[in-house]
Length: 217
Image (cartoon, rainbow, N blue to C red; front, top):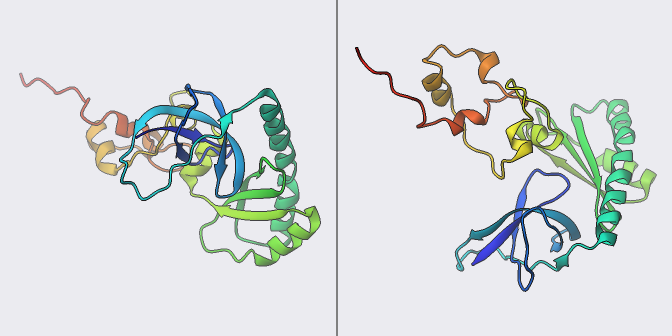
């Protein structure tokens, strides 16, 4: 079965959908049904083969997005961003050990999702109550890791280019110190191998197996 990958506003994870009767191309905007309700997202890959026996349900795309859908998406994105400062203030006032990253509003306008990073588990139950009461919307908190934060916010690498995870990567590669040692002849400088997320750069995985061999004289 062939599926397409749809990426939503948060840009953290990509979900597979069946194109159904629709002819879908890369970078098309589509309307889909998710566990959180109807959402709009961008197609980031097409014609991916998945086994028919997969346990995960693959839903059909509802339709290609129309101009009115995209206009609404842009309005919801702008409105969702407006809640961010209010959340940051509550986090500071409550002295919670967490870092707010981004806020977004669902396509139907009923639910605000806040993404945050934290070193340890955070009890934000009172925050949810207070903020839901203040904005009169359902509030969801989602903890993400530093690599997801970088992918969500973007930035530039030491190469001067936009970071790979934001620019074109559709899945995170596993990166190890062995990859860095192999490419830097064991003379690993942390500044050279650390990305914007504070973790090993994704591009180290791209070069595995491509290192030219030295010719013995």
